[in-house]
Amino acid sequence: MLDQKLNGTPQITYVRHGNRVYIHGDFQDKDIKAGEYIVFEAYQSVSMSTFAATWNDIWLKDYGTALLKRQWGSNLIKFEGMVLPGGVTLNGRQIFDDAREDITRLKEEIRSTYETPVDFYIG
Image 1 (cartoon, rainbow, N blue to C red):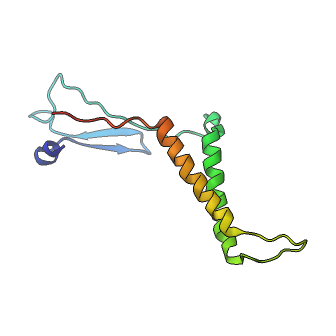
Image 2: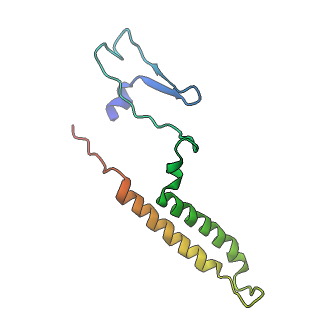
């Protein structure tokens, strides 16, 4: 990694709207030689209509619900202790704290279940 910073590497630009990768390197001299490989990892935005199952993921639904619950609790904290008609009292602090715990639990779940382990570089 330090070697890449000091010696430089060919610069690569990805234009998302054109869906193209441009390699700014010297193909004639030493940057990129014939027989070498260029490997990169790319992500693509998915269409909601094409990949509808993505939006049906239970973790994503739970996480979105927890974020909305946190915002709702944050809004209700201002009116804590207010009694509504029928004797109902809203507790915005409790809703906010529950949502914060849910978000922490869901982030931990996504890290432990889906995240790849850290690779160690040797050399």
